[in-house]
Image: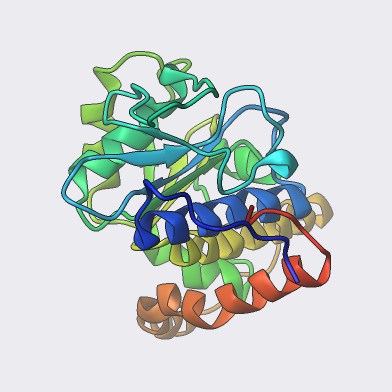
Length: 251
């Protein structure tokens, strides 16, 4: 079982659960090879009336992140944790704060620079319908043009406008982003997206690939409406996987 520690006295049960889930997501991103040293971020909203969020301590590898090491910040990336000793990269929270503040239901936002995702973000058509997985994610995808390293707070408005009510954003020439009502939902969107990107990169290396019929695309688009619900089934299984590995994410 995963090594755990008692919830700190100053923390609500809801915040501790959010911390445990987000720490697990960091470990899983590392496990699947989607991390980028200490760069990119995964964030989660702290349940409650305040606009507080959890994000990784700056300079930590994803496979080092634990529930207690996550840092609580406000919408500007300012640390609000009592007695916090870890630092954060405020610039890294630019993208996350935009989505969290614009989408009240956005319980988690995951942003990656994984190679296959960046490659597909640079393809003129983005995700192509070359696999069942791709056909399931395509209806959820929006696009945002690259404007440089996300340091300009003015970009937040444009990013949110491009995302709209979609749950997946391809950041052109940059990476991938998913939104979920909770960490498990955001992670399942990212898993399906990254699998679609991996298959696309491999398929196009062999040639143009076979395209399905429009009828198949329409049918799968209708079926894709429930994609986020897959997280309810898959997330507990992923946590069991970490526990079997003896991961200490929950401490």
